[in-house]
Length: 237
Image 1 (cartoon, rainbow, N blue to C red):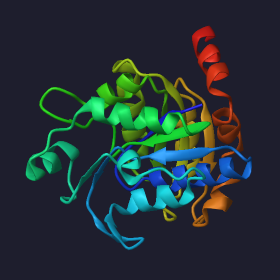
Image 2: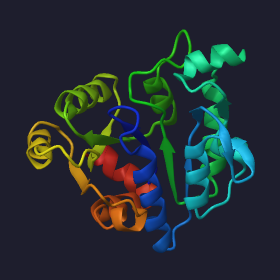
Image 3: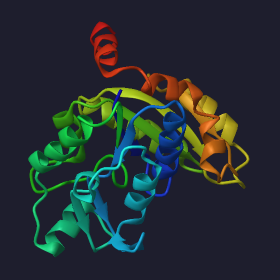
């Protein structure tokens, strides 16, 4: 099945978890890939001027897709997408992103679509990130960066996803602060309050994505569900 990957903030591990999932699904001999439709901030990676996250996602995908499909909108300025688009004299068009998504979907069994920043982001004067997710009809996987402040950020994000009319598939707890002594208590408090399953907890120090994937087996099994079956399960509740 396909899903949209969002986070409670920037630098909470969206790309790290997505890469781990891609590698684990590829080991299961699935045709998998990830898109990052919007990327802000470019550098030199793989001998190209591209976004670092895009480069990492492309390397981990088992299906090789054209860069314009993986990342339809790449902006130089490392800021919110609508601001970066304005600086570049561009307008973010959902139809262009959908076209890239459909092209990628036709070549994959599992397609992950990674967002940018957190959840409540404008795309242009009229549309928000949730409009893209609804346009693609994707369930949402929430990556929670577990550190001081995670309770507020995670609960607000989970509430916003549901309030925006999107499906919260589940969430992953990613321990991002090794000095925070209340990480497990925070995860337990969130699990008791979020109306979606905890699909994995990645401990601090799992810098190797295959090691991180070992903590995401239930999520990998869920994503490996064939698309037609996943849609039926979703309709049946």
